[in-house]
Figure 1 (tube, one colour):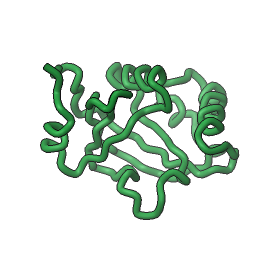
Figure 2 (figure 1 turned 135 degrees about the vertical axis):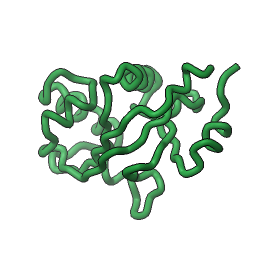
Figure 3 (figure 1 turned 180 degrees about the horizontal axis):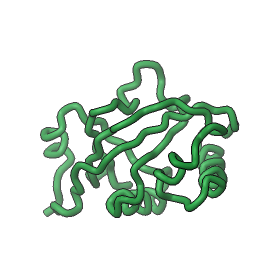
Length: 141
């Protein structure tokens, strides 16, 4: 029996839902990295968060990461949010994303990601979020 999204939303009433990545394979890889404790940060283009957007990460809020099929995967709690230009992302943040072993690798992969998702500019502003894993919902299924 799998856990239902409505049940998770009931337990975390202020939570927003989101997906890691922009395709099923990448999403599954990123969820695995979070479960392993290797991924404790993520970022997105600021342009994708309209003013007063409820999806904007908020320190202390717990949000529900979804599998690509919209089923609940895990719950994270945001511990830090900052706005940073792509060209100014630090190696510490890039490595906390858990996807690459170097800042250069992070830059290359994220350049391609942003090109696929609305365009890339080295000066573009990113919403940089650090988080902790609160609950792995796959363990409940």
